[in-house]
Image (cartoon, rainbow, N blue to C red; front, side):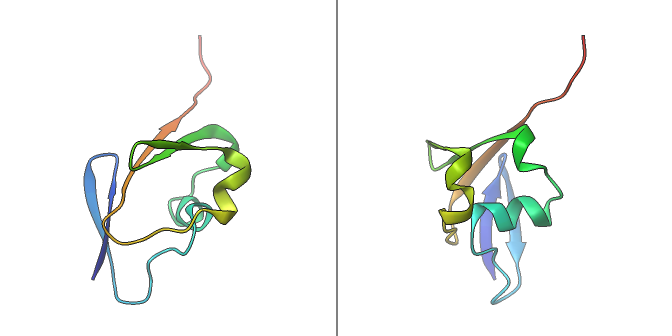
Length: 70
């Protein structure tokens, strides 16, 4: 099993199903990349780099979503 810590919660992925990139993870989680700020192991990832940011087991990922309201 491969594991990512997403917003403080461990999420396990069966062998060979770990998302390859940050964008792949957002797609799995059904999160629109335009509405999220992402941080991996303490480093903020620019939105333009979501497709080029590889994921590896054991990483800590924080996703902060923007929601409209008033």
